[in-house]
Length: 482
Image (cartoon, rainbow, N blue to C red; front, side, top):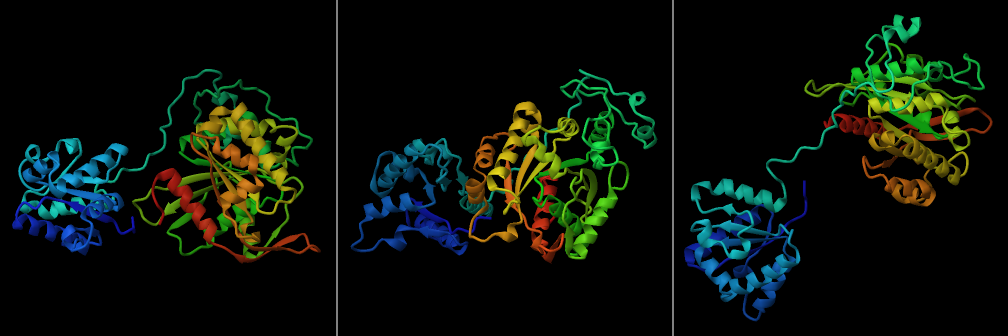
């Protein structure tokens, strides 16, 4: 809601005493509704320059009311008296700004053709000629002055999901291995990935299958099937990317901790326990923050699916199903020299089914140099733009500066990115469809004891995770959890 006090100048003709009293009553009623009205009979007195008063009033006011009567039209078109002078100034300002909404014609007496000067005939007026309808017309005038329309334009929703005809491959139930079929993954559809599907089920890593993070153990067919099922159940996918020690795991842990422990929020969290979600990982995240310490990441990091449903207390609000994809910093950093591994490449390409949200987590004080962080995230976005333009175009991308509690200087988030992530900042400005958003984040007060392999959280913050949950819900549903 606009809190500014609007300044309004009233242009009118002195037709008779009854008309002057009506204008005076209108001005008084507007002032009682916190509108700063400029009226000649209040402002002009002996010694004042009336031409300067009229010129300055038209120029400095937010709105100008034109109280139209047949006599007002005559004076305006023949440039007579004060109305003639005011109209000359109004015409000049309107000529210089064709799109201005500053001038509000008000029909006071006579029909529209009888009272409307030629140069304002194209403007929409407010009819205040019928006394019985005054209150309704007055409310319309107030709403126009305050720019508070009665019928507000609703926000744009999400683009519909359209079924695509088969182009490159058909994935049938018979193609799935027995383990996948036993887990109930039977809702298969024919889709176009925009690239050739390879039958190879294993990816060549310098790891044994036992050492692989869970996400990377899936075959290509299983991964496609998982994402197809996310689309069918309208589960939104959120991909988390960050370098080693960027605070990505702590960011996700604080979100999960807030979802389960904050008692003031207006929604409940339901953990998805069915395949392919990992509940053990969530429980460990919550437990570590409950004990106020978070172990440093392992050498391999984690890559997992974490499912959670937001169930609002207000039954009129929709349930939002989310799937967080927790991707290890170790694998993300490989893009600098090796490019993304095939499994993550496939994950990103398949994510076009679900129009994902991508969070790029970058720490306020990086483990390595600022320039390395800048290069890493910029390389990732350029990789998407060049090799997966559809993913780049349709994804909602958020840059989140983590560890904001370490901030040592007074600096705004945009200025921080411009100074310390200049390549990333320039890349952000170049994305026109679904513009890249940015923000800051803090788990709370975090300290590192050099003699122990632990990070200690001395104070947990609910401020930032609360904002993230509310923004995610509003982004996907166009509804407000608050």
